[in-house]
Image (cartoon, rainbow, N blue to C red):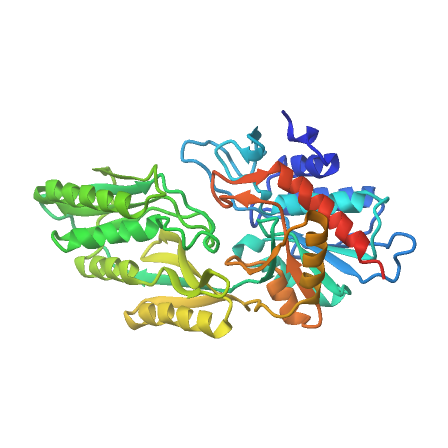
Length: 482
């Protein structure tokens, strides 16, 4: 069954069209061109800024002119993550959608429902002139997944809305009223290579693969293997018993806000130590299987490496392994009131450059001072050993507070479904965090249909929930008549 045959037809047709257009972060020009042309075809005058954000207004339905102005908001980019066996090219190929047991998913790749379904819902609302509502604004932002880059470049003064409804939440029974901000930290540790090869040594390639991965906010507390960290844990165990020298860490990770599901290290070791090293790896694999019960497909593979590059010096290898094994990663503190991780970090990206090992961390917290403290720990560690650590982005947290819009929506939800929707703090960044920090007089919520495993090859979107959220949002906008 084609997803274009699902209901509501306009929503699923727009989502289908979005899936046909490559739109990973930093490559949103094609999707922006499509949305701009479609809005113009519908009779609107969209504004597109230099950062590829789209802003557009829809006038009120007759009789709703005095209703409060509402901003609908979502982002146009997606995280490109795939199964290692997939040949999918996120810069060229359409997403191949499938339907299984009431869910839409993709063939061995991320689906991009985060946040393509938000864009589809907003476009469907703007396409239907018969809908009753007050004045609407829509802000479709670019490059959210790499640190809310688009919205930070947008001229917030253009927004006139009293209320902001973001559609980047992933549970239709939740009303998000707060989320963490984030700090990005780029790090480098420098090395020199040996000038000649060592006798009686051999090269090995150790690979962690088959991990689940996942969103580094929403799944950071779910005991999922960070493959980059696990590689350094393994190297740390090996160096405790055998001399080893790093040759390189293969480029790893798909995004700073995604838990890396595979990573590989190439090392130089004494030939006589290979059997012992393989036993250490086998033991670590058994420990992982015991500790990480969700990781059903995780593998640790050790094979000879044909690489011809000389290894790093023993001193530099020791330092790099020790620092990346020891740097804080994962959940640091927990918010017991809202039952979510409060402060955390994710070692999301790594590559070996000409004379350094480079990596990027994303630190999250609802409290600005907490994320600054945690980021400073990382920066101090690297700077104190002669490395380099630079803060490259900062977004304030969105702290929960008494929110009339959330209360109105919550009452409307209960009236409609005869059950409560819960006001929550989520552990994933949504763009009201930035907008409301600049416009504190605004009120905002984040809602959305049920999604699971976003940022992974197992991402899926619930069909019934998508119908529910669209109908609920349309009805709720109609209820806001002044």
